Image (cartoon, rainbow, N blue to C red; front, side, top):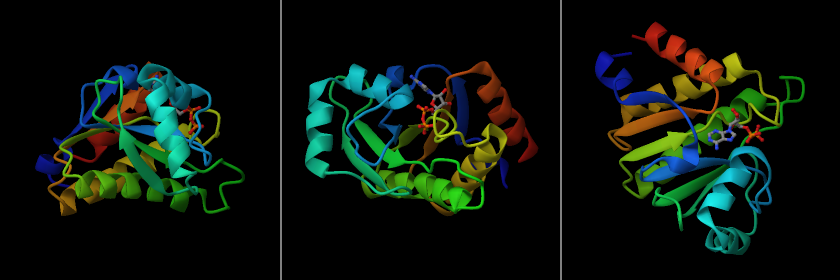
Length: 175
Ligand code: ADP
């Protein structure tokens, strides 16, 4: 992968609800009606307008994505994607996780968004092994950025320092 592509990716440790970007990605569930973890944090920070818009969408299948406004968030939009629950690793989980990243990036491109931030989808309550999920996330995003100008920048927003270290190590290896 070229340095120019890798340099369009940033890793930060922190709370994704605080980021001032065009869109933050939500690790949602199929109902799109909120939940725990990053989903709950995004709904709390965005306020009731987000829940109302999500309710009108009426759900989202695993591996797909939907876009809404950002309401009280600094981020202008929220891209809701539904990661797979990790079962045995042999039930299409890698393919579905890859699809989450691709479908989110596709929506960002469609709206001409410049900067998008992802959490570590599926690696909390949904139980996806962190290193394997990072490998899928980074490979999928690098391939997308290599082939497309939009979005110009992608941030991986890791809630823990351990996650941020996994992402930084993976990105250094791709240079
Ligand atoms: P999933 O159900 O997809 O596993 P979770 O929300 O349980 O979703 O976890 C996904 C990731 O989001 C985990 O790495 C978790 O630490 C992280 N996370 C939780 N809250 C936040 C937040 N406010 N900002 C960024 N990441 C968060």
